[in-house]
Every structure is written in C-alpha cells, then in structure tokens.
Image 1 (cartoon, each protein chain N blue to C red):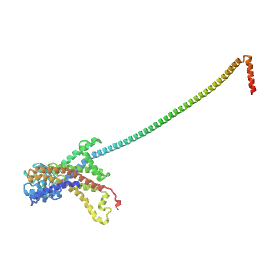
Image 2: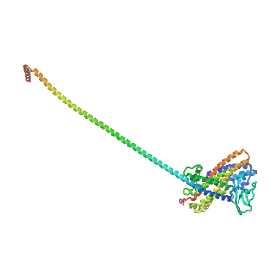
Image 3: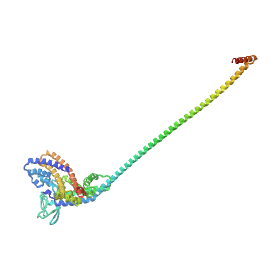
Image 4: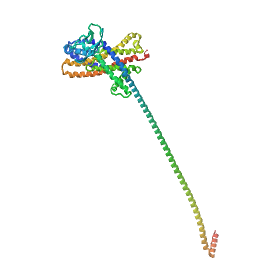
Length: 164
Length: 364
C-alpha cells in the first residue's frame, strides 16, 4: 500500500514547485516563445503570400508580353503581305503599261512604215509612168523622123481600122 | 494509444519469462515483499513477484526490498550504495516547525534512531508519542523536483530570451532543438484538441505540463535518479490540476452532456447521469494511475534486470542481461516522451471537451 499512498509533504512540494514553475515559465518563457513563433509564422506567411502574388503578376506580365509579341508579329506579317501585294501590283501594272506602250509604239511604227511604203510605191509608179512616156516619146520621135515612116504608120493604122 | 501499451506488453513478456524461470527453481516461493505491494498494474505485480520471491527464498539478496527502496521516496539521496547525501528534514509537529538534517535520524549502521521526538518507520516520519506530524521534508523526490524545476527554468528562460533577441529570425542552438517540440505540442496536441478559439489560454499550462513530465521522466532514468513521475503524490497533483482546469472551464455544452445527455430518453438519464458524473473523476484518476504505473513499472523492470545478475550469480549471463537492460532503457526513453505526450494530450482533450460550444440541435 506504501506505493499507492500519496505523501502530504510531496503533494505540498509538488504543488508549490509546479505552480511556481508554471507562473515563472508562463511569464518569462512561454509568453515570448509563443508570441515570437506567432510573429515569425505570420511574417513567413505574408512573405509567401507576397511571393505568390509577385509570381502571379510576373506570369500575367509574361502573358501580356507574349500577347503583344503575337500581335506585333501578326501586324508585321500583315504589313509585309500588304507591301508585297502592293509591290506585285506595281510591278504588274508597270509591266502591263510598258507592254501597252511598246505595242502602241510598234503599231505606230508599222502604220508609218505602211504609209511610207504606200507613198514610195505610188511615187515609183508615177516615176515609172513618166519615164515610160518619155521613153515612148523619144522612141516615137526617133522612128517618125522621116516622112515615109510617118506615112507608113498612118497607113498601118488605117488598115487596122478597116479591118475592124 | 496503441503504441502506449507496446512497451508494457514487451516488458510483460520479458518479465513473464523471468518469473517462470524464477518459479521453476523455487516453487514454494511466496514473497512478503510482493504481498506488501499492491498490484496496480500487471507488469508491476509480475516484476515485483519474480525477483522478490527468489531473493526472499535465498535469503541473501533481497531484491524486492532493494527495488522498493529505489522506487520509493526517501529522506536521503543515495546515488549508489553507500554514496549519498542526507537531505533536510522539515517537520511540522505539535511543538512547532523542526528543521534538521536527516543524518540525525540514523546511526552509523543506517538503523533509525529518534531525534527531537521524531523517528523514521519504514521511511516515514512519525512522532514517538504518536501525535500527528506533517512531514514537509526535502526528500529525494522533492530534491529531484527542485533540480528539474531549476533545469526547466534555465532551459526555457534562455530559450525565451533567444526568442526575444532574435525576433522573427531563424532559431539557433537550443532554441532550434526545442522549437519543433514546442510547435508539435502547440499544433498537434493543444490546437487539435482544444480548437482554434480557446487554445491560446491553455497553451502555457500544457507546455509546462509536458516539459515537466518529460524532464522528470528522463531524470528518473539517470543512474541514481529519483522516481518523481512514478510517485503517486506527484501524479495526483497533476491530475487534480487537470480535473480543476477542465471543470472550472466547463461550458454549458459540457455540463449539458453530463447532466442531461442530449438525444437520450429521459428514463435512461437515471443511469447515464451518474455514469457521466463518475466519468468526470475517473478521467483524471486514469491519468494519475497511467503515469505513475508506467514510470514505476519502467524502474522496476530496469532494476529487475540488473538484479537478475546478482540472483543468478553466473557471470556469463551478464552480457545478455545487460543487452536486455540497454534495450529496456531505450524503450524507457521512448516511454518517457510518450507518457508526457499522453498526459498532455488527454488533459488537452478533456479541456477541449469542456470548452467546446457545439450545439446538438440535430439530435433532439
């Protein structure tokens, strides 16, 4: 039974020692420890929250940048395309115009050439007729220089007329 | 909770083997020492019985007596056989307060002698004329209690100062060693059991309680250490404090569950209410006995193993028994923490049930 019988003396000392221990520790140990731990946890938590927020902002910023980049790229492509189209059109227009001008020039030249040719042919024809007349006149003048030849001719002509 | 009993089961198995061994040699052994010890716990009873029985029969090494002497309180602190200090006796008698050294109460052979009308009988102080004596001596347990208190103050005030100085900076040294334990008690034990709303109020007490029990358990494991947390007076005070704190903080929900359990037919309350009222007291009583029995059992096991060497008197068994003793000591280190944890956890959960403001409207 000895083990199970609590001693009054020890009960007294345990109460005194444990009680004092509690009050002293509560004031000088637990109070700063609990407060400090709480404070540290809060500061860590707020730091973590801040980090998370910053990360989010960074991500947002990056996403914004990417969007901008994509837009810029699209715009550049658009501009390039438009420029290419414009230059292509310019070139083709220029080509068409040049062709048109060239063919017009050629036509003009051809028309001029035809005219020249026609006038040349006409003048040759005129020259040839005059020359033939001159030659015929000279030949006739030569052949009818004497009187007999003239008479013969008239005779010939008259005979031909008779036959008709 | 299951882990709690593991060491007891292991201890019981070992001691069961020991007791069988002892009884095979001494069939008729019945021990007077064992009879004087109350079987609070299966382990203790077995532990007490086996070596004590054997010793008594041989009449040479009275191991039972030795063990009882070691786990009981004393007016002197014996670190090893013959080496010790006499502690002061403080007695409140009918003639007033008397203070003197306990060395006056024994002669050179260690037999008790009377001094100023006071004499020690089985380690208890009595007046020769039979009048009432209040013994407030600094006994071995009180001295150990004071040592533990000084240690706790030194450790935690220095840690507290470290927190004050370092503010929100990372912990360092002793501070960083104790911080996880403090946080564990705060978060896993106190906050979990009592709840976010009330836990702050009880945290300082529960931290003191945990570290007080732990350090006293550990001091008890040191060679020559006292058996403070294995003393029923100490566990009695701690559990009475739990009882008081729990019931003084009891809210209406708590009392409602005791006197008029919601959702139970009226006629059943005639049975249930007395059971609940008994329950108010059995909870702290179980705390008291659990701590006392576990720590005392641990001491008895250790002493029994060592005592076996002297009983068997075969030097060959020494390494085997030493190995057992070392193994048990490691288990006891675990038990030292576990018992402090369990006591704190249960106290916190009792307080938690008392301050809980939960409405069982759905049960009506």
